Amino acid sequence: MKNIYRPIEATIEDIVVETPNIKTFVLKAKEDFSFRTGQFIELAFPGVGEAPFTPSSDPNIKDKIDVTIMNVGRVTSLLHGVSKGIPVGIRGPFGKGYPLEKFYGKDILIVGGGVGLAPLRSLLFSLFAEIDKYNRVILRYGSRTPKDIVYKAAIPEWAKRKKVDVVTTVDVGDPEWKGNVGLVTTILKDLSLDLKNAVAIVCGPPIMMKFVVLKLIDLGFAHADIYLSMEKNMSCGLGKCGHCRVGKFYACKDGPVFTFDQLQGIHDIWD
Amino acid sequence: MHTTYYIQAVGLDGFINKLKKQFRVFAPLEKAQERQKEKDYAYRQLNGETGICFNPYRAIEPLKEFFTYPQETVCSYFEQDKKGTVPSNTTDGIALRGQSPDMIIFGVKACDIAAHKVQDFVFLEGVEVDSSYRIRRQNTIIISGDCTDFKRVCHCLAWEILPHPTEGFDLNLSPLNDGYLVDVGSLKGEELIGQYKDYFVPAKDTQLSARRKKRENLIDRLKRHLLPQNLVPRNRVQSLMKEGYNLDTWKEFMRTCVECGGCNFICDTCHCFLLSEKKEEYINKKIRTWDSCLYANYARVAGGANPLRSRAQRLRNRFMKKFDFFVDNLGMPACCGCGRCIEVCPGKIDIREVLKDLASKLQK
Image (cartoon, rainbow over all chains, first blue to last red; front, side, top):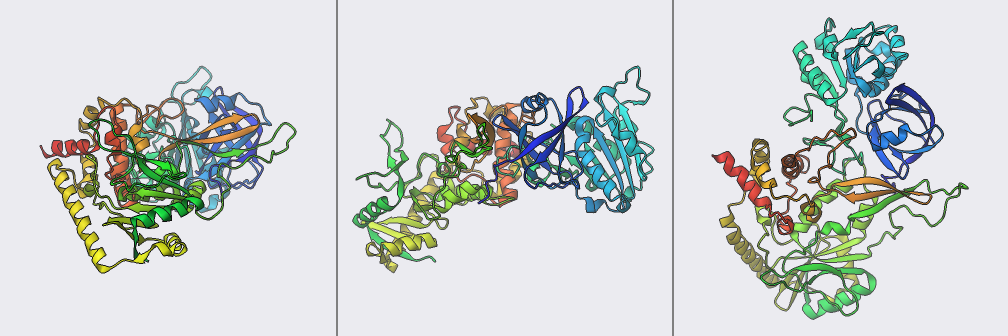
C-alpha cells in the first residue's frame, strides 16, 4: 500500500541566483515525476523541514523540475545555504493547477508580483508550447526594485515571441532603471482586451492580488475569469492536515488556484 | 445484515476471555472516583483476569487515539549510511502487521461512532487514502454499546445523534436483564459470532421490544436534561456561523482560553496534524503530530504572515471548521455532542454556550 507521506529522492543539479534573496533550484528526481502547471510540491530538506512550492519550469520537460525560492523562512534559508549535489525529498504533485483547456482561444492576461512570477513562468512555458491554441498572452510584472526582478534574462526574450506582450514595472527605481515605476496596477491599462473572451491569472503577495483583483473588476473582468493563487501553509498537501482551509475548500487539494468566483462569500481571503 | 442475538452476562465474560487470547482487547474501565465528580471510564488493555465493566456512557478519551497517535513516525526515508547501504531493520512507520483484525475495542458509544464518520472522511476519502489509518481501522473490531446513562455535558441529541449505535459497529451490546442483546453490524462481527456461536442465542421479539422501551426511556431522560439548556438545533448551526462571523462572541469567549489545545486533542472529530522532519543518525524521519487550531502559529506561513493572528480569529476558525466546512463537505457538523471539550477546558469555554451566545446576539 502506498505511503502518502514518503518523499521521492531528487538531487539539486544546479542553483541559479535570481536576486539577492531568490534562487532557482534545478532538481532531478530519481523516480518518474511529472506535474501539471500550477500544481505544487512539498520539498523536504531531509530530516530538517519541508515546505510547499509551485515549480517554475516547463511541465513538458520531464527530466528536471525548477523551483524558485525566496529566502524567507526556516526551510528556505537552509536551502539557500546549500550547494548543488545534495539530495532533497519531493512529494506531490498536489492540487489542481491551471485549467489550460479553459484558456483556449482567449486573451490571457498574466499579472505577477515579485517571486509570484515563479508559478507563472511555468504557466508561460506551457502556453508558449501550444501558442497557436491561444489568442494572446499579456504579461504584466511588478517587483519591488530592479534588483528584485526574477528571470531577468528571460523576460526580454519572452517579449519577442509572437502573440506575447510584456510590460514590467518596479515599485521603486534606481539610477540605472529606465523602465516603469509604480505598482503593478499602474500598468494594467491600454490592454485592448476582448473582455468577453479573456481570462486574468494573478500570482503575488496577498496585498498585491487584492488590489489587482479590484482593478480587474474595474476593467470589467467577470469574477469567474480571474484566477488567483491562494498560498497557505499546506503541510500534507492532501486535504488531511487541515491547515490550508479556505472557506469550504482546502487550498492544497481544491486549489491552490481558485477563480475569484469560487472565493465569493469567504471571509478574510487576503489575510 | 442486522441480526440480533442474546448473550448472558456470564457468557459475555467467557466470550471476552476467549477474545483476550486471540486479540488485544481494550475496554473502558472505571477510574477511581473523585469527590463530587461523575464516575469516569478510561480505556485500558484487558490483561489476565480483568473483565469488562459495561460503561454507561462514553470513555474519557476519544476513539481516534486508536487510529492516529498524538505523535508518530509516518515514514523513514533515504535510509542510507555513508557507504550507501540500506539497513534492513528500518520500517515505513506503518507497522508491517497482518491483514486480519488484531484489536478489539469495547465500550464505544454512538457519539464516538458518529465522530468517526469525520475521521474516516478525512483519512480514507479524498485524493489519497492514509494507509496507516486504513490498516488500523481494518484490523480493529468495534464492539459498541448502548448508553444507559449520560454525563452532565452529554448533548448528542442536539446533533440528532441517538444515544445508542445504529451503524458503524461490528457488534453492539444492549444491556437487558441479566445479559445483553447483540446486534451484528458487519461481516467482521458476523465472523466473530460464528466463531463463538455457543455463547449466543437468537434474540426473542419480547427482548427486542423490552430494549426499545429501555432506549426510549433513556432518550426521554436525556431530552428532559437538555430541554432547559435551550441548545442550538442542528439545522440552525451553519447559518449561525455565517451570520455570527463578526460578532463579539469570539472575543468574549476567548478571554479565558490558555491555548492548551486540549479541546482539539480530546475532540473525536478534530483531525489536524503537522508534519515535521527529524534526523536520527542516517535515517530521515517524517513525524506526524496532532496540531491545534488554537495555537498561535497554526496558520502562520514562512515570512510571518498569519491569517489567524488574533485569538478570536482562532476560536472562530475552530467553529467554522466544525459547523460550516464539514456541513458543506460531509453533510454533518463535526461535533458529536460528547462534551469532552467542555470537561477538559481549563478556561471553562463551553461549545454549547458559544453557539447559544451567537444565537441570542443575533436574535436581538
